[in-house]
Length: 117
Image (cartoon, rainbow, N blue to C red; front, side, top):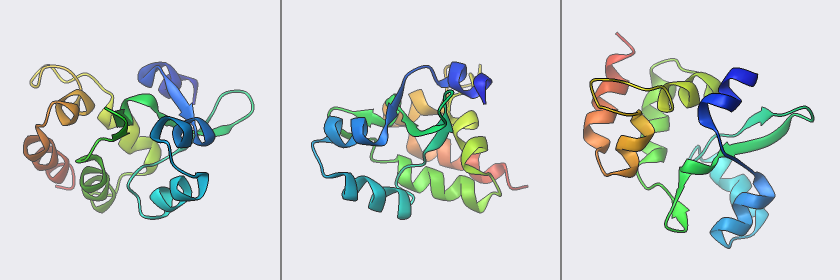
């Protein structure tokens, strides 16, 4: 999983995410259950963590949940979804995650839906 660690860059453990969002850790677990976010086991100790870029202005990027849902419906695993979100795409330019953070959810979801075909 080392390549995905490097691809994403900064990660937050679940307790760190709770602190960043100023919420209880149980709410973070609900967010995982609701697929508003996804966590991967990274590092030597395989600690469940989320990409730090999932957070913007003290909240989870609003369009992330729907995009993760579309990727799941397209057959992507959590790891594949994170990899897709953080892989550079010259036609954007940047990454799909950068585009979501800048409010371009329609374009990104359209691209995610096309992955199923």
